[in-house]
Image 1 (cartoon, helix red, strand yellow):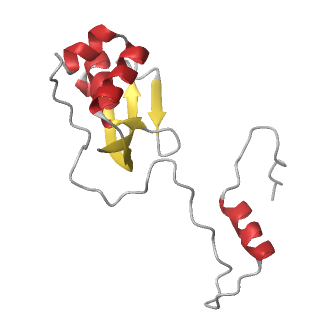
Image 2 (tube, rainbow, N blue to C red):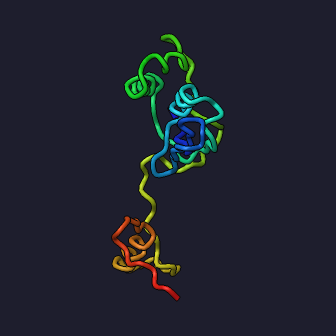
Length: 141
């Protein structure tokens, strides 16, 4: 079955001191968002947006959530053996597939014979990852 993976912000203590951000790089499943709403309160789980779509079964998802958050809180969200669990947040299914690799960027030409080295350079430029302490400091003007 189809399942939405969502991005959101979670205000852990309800005091705006500790906010955890989940985005397209580390999304939560829609049922997991519902469990976090039960734990932290509806008002403390904000800006929920579906970012990816994947495949999952209701039973496995409930087991996974129970292993992470404990059976008691998951059972309050999805009670019983014949539980109701919405796997899709909305009817929108035009999202990227969960875990899917992005398409290789082309060199910008309309011809079909892209140079493999140029494609790899473009890919490296689009997927560059910033890590603290590994980049030159900006020069002052």
